[in-house]
Structure formats: C-alpha cells, structure tokens
Length: 123
Image (cartoon, rainbow, N blue to C red; front, top):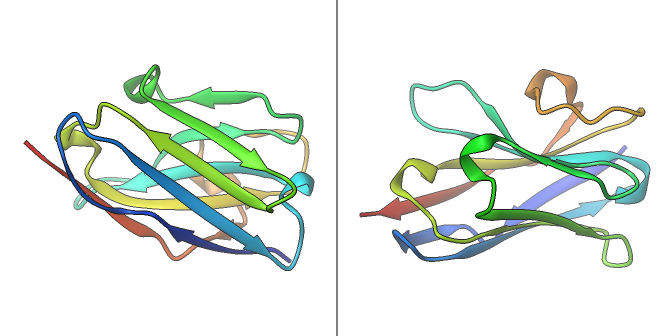
C-alpha cells in the first residue's frame, strides 16, 4: 500500500503563495486517484482538489483559479500550488489516495492519508 508524506507548509501573508508536496512510497501515484484535503479547527475535513489517474482535475469552488493540483509520476509526488492565499485558507492540509476509477472530492472515499501539514495565512 502507498505511504504519503506532506511537506511545504508554513505561514504566509495574505496574497502570498505556497507549494505543498506529497511524496509517495510503497507504490506509484499513477495507480491511484489522488487528492488534497484540508481541515480547519472546528470544521469538517473538505476536499480541495483532486487529480485522477489520467490527469483530469477538479477543485472546490473556493480555490478555483488560485490553486493548481499536479503530479509527477517519475518523482512519485503530488503537488498543490497555492496562489493568492487568503486567511480562510488556513487549515491542516492532507494528501490522500484511493484505488479505483473515480476521484470524488469526498474525504470518506479515500483510503490512504498523509499525516497532514499546517498552512497559516495571516491578514
């Protein structure tokens, strides 16, 4: 099974950018539907962006035009480029993977999770 480790989080001012990485081991990302999720204190975990096996992407409305999900099969890594960050983007961010042929934005559909990484955006 795949193991996932996130990196690249931190603190940034509103309007700034961060790039999250999710390094996979134990299996190849090309075999999985992959996604980024986030959870703010007191809120449910929400889907941010997904990328399926063939590279098609989908985003939650609140990040469209600002965030870009991508993957590098050769590096076995998933990325999330986050631009024009807002304070409401502050959360713990998780990468996740699932087998199968669908890539929904629902967190309960994903089997494998990283440990999470904090992103804090100050105004």
